[in-house]
Image (cartoon, rainbow, N blue to C red):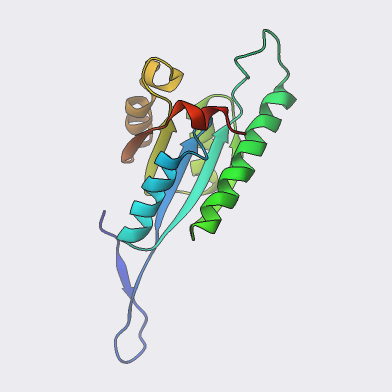
Length: 159
């Protein structure tokens, strides 16, 4: 993705590249090696800043759940993933979002406009996001490039 350069007006001419702003959307795969690999690739391409949003999806292993429980699980995942990504050298912030990934993305983009979205999800057959055709729906709704990263099941169990 090409980013606009701006001239600083300092002699000799110095061009400063504006960092790409990338929204990461992940839940169970937030700390997974596949998403970390994608972040490393983006950082190798040039300056970028990331925002990780983890939707507060209800836990599927319980017949009943409370919203506070879902938000707490999402918060723990987000905090752990953000800490790991900062250790990799990523400039990143994190937030817990709405249970609906589309609403979580919408809220995050209101707070911080981004240049692209990376969705990290589980394999087809396991992933509700892929069953819902979330990558296509997000690309159509927000008119931003969307990259889908498929994570491993083992990353899904880590909090």
